[in-house]
Length: 101
Image 1 (cartoon, rainbow, N blue to C red):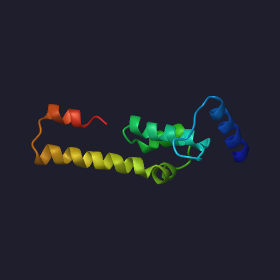
Image 2: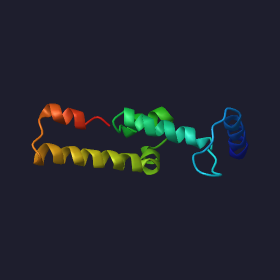
Image 3: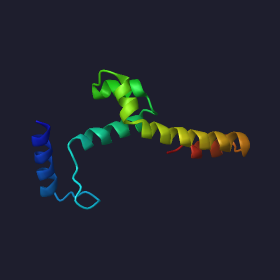
Image 4: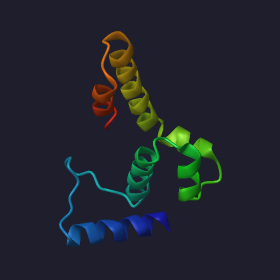
């Protein structure tokens, strides 16, 4: 089933002229779910339970395990914001600009 779906997906992408950025790699149908989940985590501010429910996944562990890199990027951004606010004495209006992804 998955192999057939990926072949059909690749055929559609080729027909509309979408090519992978690197060499002979191919997009797989699961790429759509991965991209959607990434955006959902960003939009929700990292609300794992909301994304789990939206994706129809049985367990939040699936989201945290598969997409932890996104959460790590957000943690790094939060750390940078905290450093700016507490150690470099930025004003709240300056901080609001830093909070934008």
